Structure formats: structure tokens, C-alpha cells
Length: 449
Ligand SMILES: Cc1ncc(COP(=O)(O)O)c(C=O)c1O
Ligand SMILES: N[C@@H](CCCC[NH3+])C(=O)O
Image 1 (cartoon, rainbow, N blue to C red):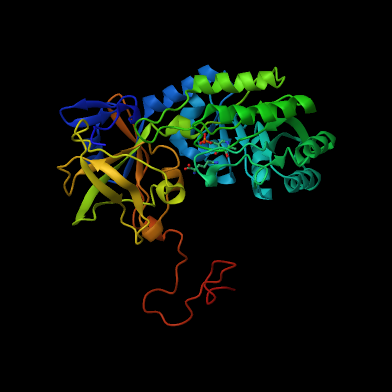
Image 2: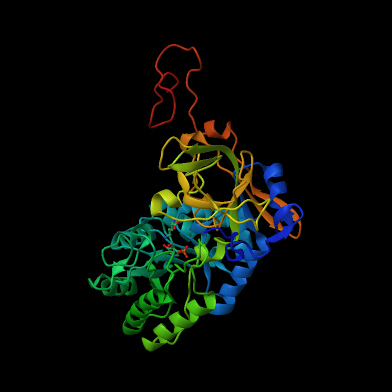
């Protein structure tokens, strides 16, 4: 492919100008200089527009943003301001949502293995409902009701519908052979409904299914919805959530269903199954992916004659794990020349100590690419920062939201000092003696009383 980057992969406000490509009215070159690289840049207008499109398609109150795709205080606030509920999948995500000011009754709580602390925090926050995933979780909720005095909690039961979809094995969830949910085929889902109805600790508020993520075929999303809707109708349950999973285009030419297509397909499937109520969804990736891009600085270009060219950038698998984990594919462009043809083939790699640290296996790039160029990978707004790590002790990047010519830092870059903040101080350089910290208390044995 020698063509320029497709506008379909760029955030909605992306625009070419004398300083190269800008997003939200701010040139990417300026963002790279001001905030450093690697940098996650989000088009705030794009994020808000996707939230609105989802609500238009499914109706107010029927869309929960799956915060696992990308969460920080600013993102939780934005989704809440736009009228979305928040789907959190751990006590940590719940903590961020509450910190952002999202009221408990706008939050739904997921997780296949919630511990007592997470369940207590959810109950204390008065969450809209807990999505219960297992009989062990029911035991736990009943015990906490009996011993910790938590009020009966609204619960939605997660069902494994026997429909699994998604572009990689690791992100398919809805099959019967899955760690998630009560199997429909096994009879566990029906048993879970009976048990929830009898329990004094739970108020049954609905059923839920999620077939998988990065699903490009709306038929598969509809199949999952049909299976869980049929079950809900048979069981006489009132609420129906059909999960998230709507895919996005990472490369030019991929076609993806819109929120409206998704809503139409899922509604028709549920109606055919006899469902007459509202349908709730939990999109993550489809809200944030294309709104975000990553800026890197090119540091090395290694040409191996007759083999290939490696382009080394200043991030890698610590800010985008998707290529290594799911063979995720991306494109790249130079913000200084967004319309440039891209005849150069090269492998874009990170700075981590392993050969699997690949961002784009076979990227198309402009021929005049040089060291110190700013390079952008679009469609990194979902599961990029969310899965970032400190591998090789790389500080995690900063995140900025851009809008109407302003850039707002929403997550600051980690510093080298941040990399030490969890380390338990030892006896200090040069001190003799036992360097082992007490693993249970976190104190050095010499100081333990
Ligand atoms: C239960 C549940 N809901 C929603 C989502 C969000 O999925 P996506 O980001 O694919 O929309 C996920 C992740 O796949 C999930 O596990
Ligand atoms: N982390 C995955 C998606 C997981 C979906 C959450 N259930 C990805 O980047 O594609």
C-alpha cells in the first residue's frame, strides 16, 4: 500500500494545515514538543460524538461505557456528562469512577471473581447493579448480607450464551467453555435465576451476555442477543443487556457496523426471540478507539540489506500490547506529511528488550522518514493506555484531550521517580545486613517490632 493514511482512521476533527496534521485544532507536532512522547492524544469532540451516537441508537439510559477500554478521571466524567452509565470491571475501576463524581446508581459492576472488598465497595456506593458471574459470587453476596449487613443488591446474571465472537481467541467470551458467566447450555443460567429469585440478599434485575470483543460482523452480535433474549423471555426476567464488542477499523478498507446498524440488528434479533423491553449495551472500544492516537519519536532506523528496515520508536509493547497479545494490526503516518504516499515498507518496533516488541509488523511509511520524526499510530484510543505497563521500567505516557484549539493534560507522564514509588525502602546504599523486606508487613525485618 503506497497511499496516504485514510481519513477513516483519523479522529473526526483531524485537519491538515501549514504545521501538518492537527486534531482538535492543535497541531500534533506542537503536542509532541509540548508534552513529549510517547503521547496519547484524544479528540474530545470525537469521544463526545460517539457517546451521543450510541445514545441515539439505543436510547437514554441504555448505554454503559465499558471503562476497561480507557479510563481516567476525565474520561469517566466525559462519559457521565454525555449521559452514559459506567461499566466497571474491578474495585479499581469503581474507585476511579466514584472519584470522578459518577454517582453509584450510574455504575454497573462486572468481574468474574469479585472479592469481598469489591462487593462491599459496590454495595456501599449503591451501584445500579452488580453483574453476578458465578455461584461462588452468590455465596459471597449472601454471606456479606448476613454478616456485614449489606442491603439486598440488584443483580444482573451474566450468561454464557454459547455464541463466541471476536477477531482473536483471547477476546472471545460468550462460548460455553468460558470463565465468564452461567452457561445457558449447561442449565446453570436457569439455576442461577431460580437461586437469585429465592435469595434475600439479591434482587434480580436482568440477564446479560457478551459474546466477545472487536466483532466486525453484526450478525454474531445479533446471534448472542437472540440467545440471551430467548432465555430472558423464557425465564420471565425484566432486564436485558447484550454486552459490548462492536469492532472498529484499524486498517484502511475494513468496514464496521455503525451504532445504528448494531442497534437495528440486535433489536430485530431480540424481538424475534419474543423480547419486548429495552436493551442495554456496553460499548468500550467503539467509543474510544478512533478518537485516540499515539505519537512516538523515531530514534533509530536500521536497514538490513535484502531483509528489511526497522524503525525504532520511543515506546512499544508497554503502551500498545495489542500486536503482541492478539496480533493486532495498525497503520502509521507522519503528522508533518499526512497526505504523503507511503512506499517504504518497514517494521515499526519499540524499545523493549525483546524481538516481539513490534508495533507494526509491515508498515507503509513515507520514503523520506528520518530519525527524530514524529510518527503517529491512529486508532489506539482503546486498550492502549488501559493495558500500559512499566516493562523495562519505562514510565507510562501522558494523555491529553484536545478540543477547540486547547490541549488539556488529563494523565501526566510518569517520571523515573514514580518508578520507585512502590518500592519498600531498604537499608540504604552501602548498609550491611539483611536486604529482605518482610513480605507480609512490607517492613524490613530489622525494623519489625
Ligand atoms: C462484559 C463486557 N462488556 C463490555 C465489554 C466491552 O467490549 P468492547 O470494548 O469490545 O466494546 C467487554 C470487553 O470485551 C466485556 O467483557
Ligand atoms: N483488551 C482487549 C479487549 C478485551 C475486551 C474486554 N473484555 C483488546 O485490546 O482487544
